[in-house]
Length: 230
Image 1 (cartoon, rainbow, N blue to C red):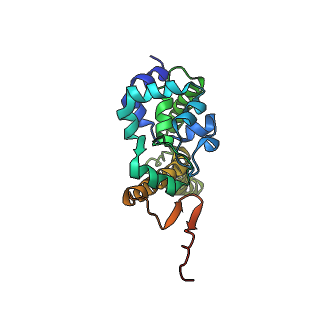
Image 2 (image 1 turned 45 degrees about the vertical axis):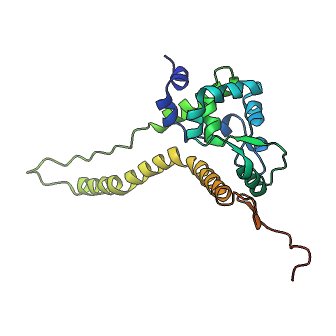
Image 3 (image 1 turned 180 degrees about the vertical axis):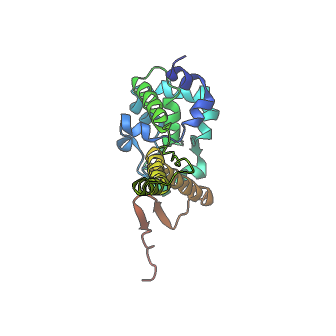
């Protein structure tokens, strides 16, 4: 079984890579397809990203809804939908909205079989995973045999190697480890923003927001009511 097949068939493997959303941007940018809040995509935008018919995305949700919901997929209706529209600046008359965040788009990439873009994302994921499995730098120090007067040059050399082994090598290892995880930082920030935005929606189900919250673009004060004070 190839690595691509493993991702298609193994939910455990998909869960292990669910945070590597940078793989999406490395294959095809998502920015132009997101809603005004910069965090979510509609079903049509997901289909556009993967260059598949919208029905293919609907079918994917039907078959794997539980897994997609675990990574943030949801359908908003009623007061929650109204509050979300106000909070995100969405202009839509739809009575419900299916929302994908980047993690659910990544999950879709690991499930869609008939999409070249999805296959490229899976390949990129496997490359990222393979690149993260590096071996730390090893610098074993050998002590001179006892009973012999050490050479001053050898002593100095041994001391230098000890300093390198205790300071430089750990630093290199830390830098290597950061290189494997640094790209996840932006993804974590976006996930936090998604959670904050949905908290706003949950806490203001009546949709009477005094302000329109744009978590990415700042805060826009509400217009003063007619007849009000200064």
